[in-house]
Length: 246
Length: 246
Image (cartoon, rainbow over all chains, first blue to last red; front, side, top):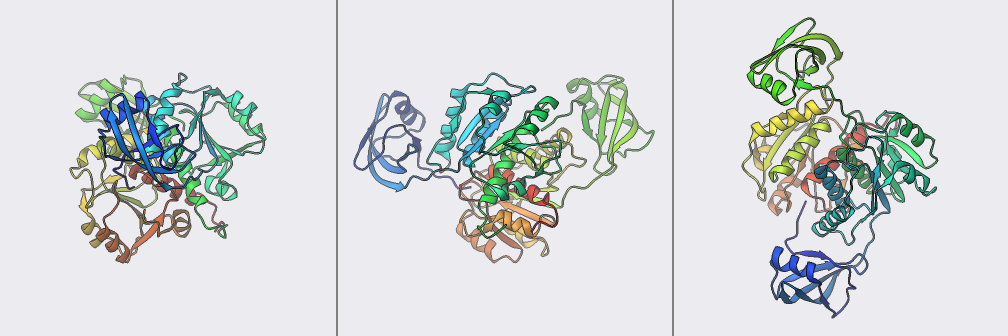
């Protein structure tokens, strides 16, 4: 609920002591024309590997920005190993899912095409850009990976046997999600169906897959994007419980 | 995650057996011009008191729609007695909070003006309309009340002594929200601060108020609207646990 006013930027380059970072044309343009940085402006940088670094803009023109790195402000930490598999929605609602999942620390985002998926054209580059911006605007030190879309069958065929896939089951036969989370909050995946739900064949396939766990979010029917955020909120909150709590 | 394709409409009139409902100009216009209903179309109605009723459009013109009520499809149920107090955000994000809080069963929505609140002009009629539409599009049988905005001081002065006010505390001193919820999920309120958080005086006032309970949503900094949805998701999921679970 707090927001920093210092620009945070994800870069792919290594970050380290006394280095000078030369940004490419796209990021230089973004910093100068959109974020309005100038020589002397302080900036925070992260690359998903080397923690967060504070730097100062040494040179700023529209084609080439150079940043002098000063000190590491935070060591690298990794996000929990949680994957979100969801059926793409309309543009705004998909963007919303990506943004919120990023804030809530998801490691990997997997679009899944199901029988009733509304939106089967998925622009992965755009989703990845949304994830990067959401990472910059939250306090994350990494950017979630956004995968190419797969069908539900493809997802299940290649799903790792040792990773529970928590399937939010609107038919109401699953265990309460809070109870499922009390067993395990890391090394898992969530699967959220489309508006209109999975079709009966898909539900059957899901129920017969060895890695799936049906879970229920409560008595109310939720829109898909609400279910995503609520489920990730439950995961984060149960993960936050002290170890002695059952 | 499922959506009905039958139009659901909130009305203020009583609903009962064999009644004919004559809608006013605004709702008639909405049904005919926006929802494209015609004579013979089936429709579901609720008013927050009499459950959900199925009816059939008996007469449809732009100024006066009449509906013949047939059968009660669901008895009235009440939502949990949970209030959401939040500092208004920019328009889209406020709308989002109202929509998601409605889906997640909130009974009452209270805008609260804090020192750092971004948006102090609150159009309560518009928020109430958003809540009504979200109720119609979810499966709710009631519409949450949207109150006139108050300042944080006014909220705390008139706050009922027997209603815990769960204050999502980004300073990290609160108990994990899931643990707080295991104590009580009903007859409570949530208070979510603005982007940038409460100011130090406000945090001090909150910590010294007898009804407040500081809670923490986990290690990540969340945007205000994300915190609202995540917190209500946690509440719903813990409320969904069987009674024997601690």
